[in-house]
Image (cartoon, rainbow, N blue to C red; front, side, top):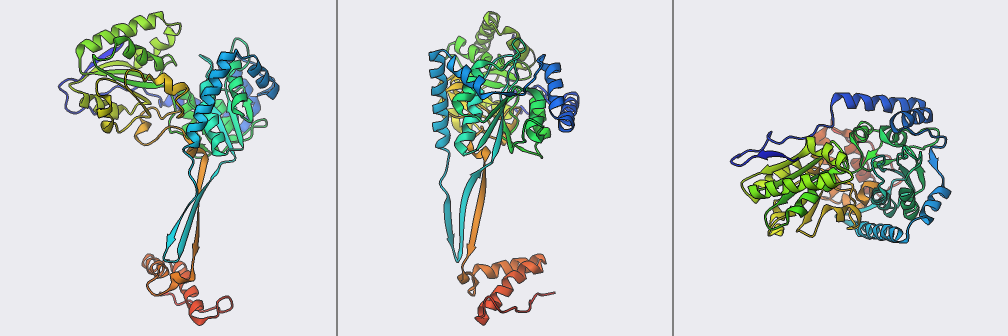
Length: 446
């Protein structure tokens, strides 16, 4: 079921690695059409797209607070306890990422840096194939910890019931989100970016989704902040050797594949016997899975067993792929960490499946996909915060040899006379002793 890719003896892997495409012109044009319709027709377009794509007829786009509370109260005690544990661990981790204001300065110039949260954040939570209360927590909780006042969730309703999954609504109640709307797909991204009659526009959008959702976020990136780069279809690279049971490696290859198509699920090894045994286990576990259709769809286009010459070569390939999840299931995994350059989240050793990160480890499982881990990171509180600088200048900065003189010299070099005069005028007023009343003539150089 895994496609074999033998790269032993290859010196340069560039251009040798297949990747699923999520930016074909067809989907991009479809997404642009959806965005345009929602921007121009608002709620009416949202209802039409929800009917067409999700098979759900909506009277109210917004889920009531009463429905969320009812969903929470109906939870089995052990599930509620698990959600509360996940919420608390996520919140604890993200609180540790908050920083106190910074102050520094010298030579008469003082700088204070502080951060403020955006006012309104939008969290996209997938649905349809499965319910994802974990994604609700992994997006909404960091926003709330950052200090966002209004946290909005868009999540598609289940086709069979016409309602958002109760467990997802329970998670929304536990997290303390402001609003939940039963809208999914690119149309949900459009609603949060542009606003409609029922949904006020947000400042930042976060959350994973299929390729249409990911493309929609790219398309609205000039209108609204987009967090965690290209959080699209799920990906995993498992690097394994004979020290780890084949079943461990196989289940970890398919655990991300069960999200559905357009992602990738790779095994990389330098041992042919491992490639064979893990591939057999992948086939066996897939056939036994209730989500075998989703797994098979991912593996058909994005599932590979890659043979290389060494652990170092395996990391070279992983860095080129820049996967969302990277697992090191091999001896002395810690020694390979310095070789990791590009990965959203890394899991070390046989007892560290990516599923722990998906639910309870603490860092958000919203991670960069499609190679964007080359320049992007996991969702954090920073995605909801803006940094501000306050600069104050003492009169002493205008002393001979002070920083103000450097401003004047640089401004003159750039031909920006008003910049230079802002210093010369103050210097002249200071020298005259008549600060506040004197209006000296500029001495700009022409």
